[in-house]
Length: 145
Image 1 (cartoon, rainbow, N blue to C red):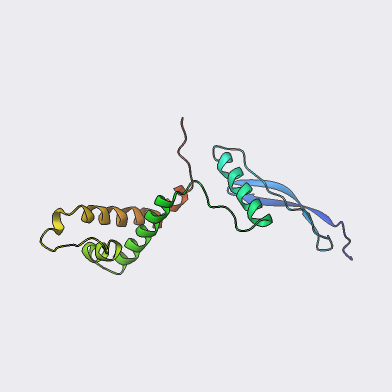
Image 2 (tube, one colour):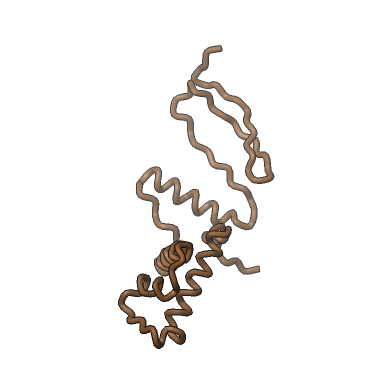
């Protein structure tokens, strides 16, 4: 059966545990309009904001940065990932701190009480949480009950 410009078929899309009905436009369609399905739940405001950023990125690239991730948080995330990569390579916390904080002298004698030691340990610990599924929490905004 040849396709026409207006071939349409019903489709069911699984999103998590939900099944959403949608319409699919066949290959004969010319420039079909895009569509987005936004689930209505506690994270709807975040989804709508992400959709708006995506749309702006399509029409006036590049997409604006995500306001939920501040520059400080972005820097800390980079440090966390570097720390966890180094820990997985069996590097010591002191060696990691030397690379992450090159402007701060790290003395062997004072390392046990150094504030950078605690910071480096926290970065590695929080990085491991990201690796074990915590990345899902990155873009959630704190909400008031």
